[in-house]
Length: 438
Image 1 (cartoon, rainbow, N blue to C red):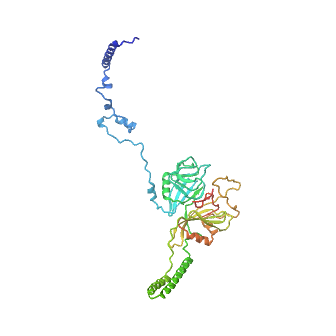
Image 2 (image 1 turned 90 degrees about the horizontal axis):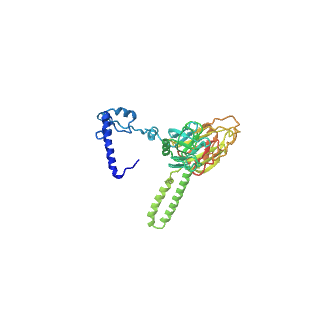
Image 3 (image 1 turned 120 degrees about the vertical axis):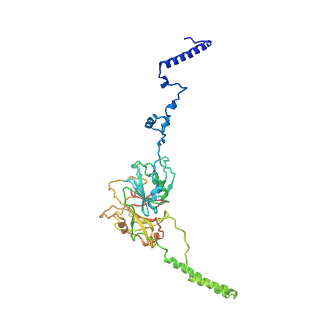
């Protein structure tokens, strides 16, 4: 093929334009429907004939509406594909029942449920996800020892643990997480977002947490003379204070007599001093107002060691031996919680939650771990005794002086725990008694 020279380009372009005009005329004469289907672009706009695609309209609505002319088309509201879910606010759910402490948290591993109890009973419940096989959640009696709104695990590569409430220093805590419907955590107790936020805002530090393998009965009221009662200041302190006031009055009287012998000028002052001394001698000594007590007292009786341990404001106070009847028999684990003083002020309202102790077979071996459970002291040899809270209190004799010391510090939220097991190694600085049952 020969390439035309530049001087021949004008001839070639003119020929191509003439051929295009002839072809257009021939096609218009050959196809009479050309104007209806294709139209001429200077007189036709495709956007006037078909409605523009609307991403909010679904497919079937588009097929129905595109047949109507534009003047008869009825506009419709856009479809919202991501509609917000209307969830019940936790505040409205909390208003249904009064929220009044002291609080107790109960977790059931078998049913994967968590319960929050207050002074008036059950406040709220929800589902949880506990530790999976190989990373099981320990069971027993704990308390909230630390709270952190934004927390990351220092064991599992900084995994997020929002709304965290720690119950052991070894890494077990309650926090918000994924709930697949079965145990799936590494030992922690995962909760839903709504319940975790409600629990965080409601429960303070030192709130008692009971983790049981199966469902247990909710905390029930109990009355017993063996439970601690508020104790007022002994009368001996008031008598000693009165004797101190009388001694001071006598010294003032001697000073007045010495001043009277000095002259007539001192007689006026002496009369004033005598009047004040007389009134002071008759007045009752008032002890200074002490600041409010901070913290709560926790008592623990172990059948394994046969001792009573007392901690106040998470600090050890004293320990003393106690007498336990039928020490060879299981007693169970019972958590007594002081709710509020009665109207007379001499007694305290108590509630109790109990966990049954199940003896493991003798041939079963336990692996050593950081959450190792203290072995039970003696194997049962006598007929079984009911593991009820009332039976446990009847079998224990608490020394009177120890009960009075506890009664002086008794406040709502204080506790008494009776168990077959000993104190766990998790119990330490900043914690109440931690008792592991598994």
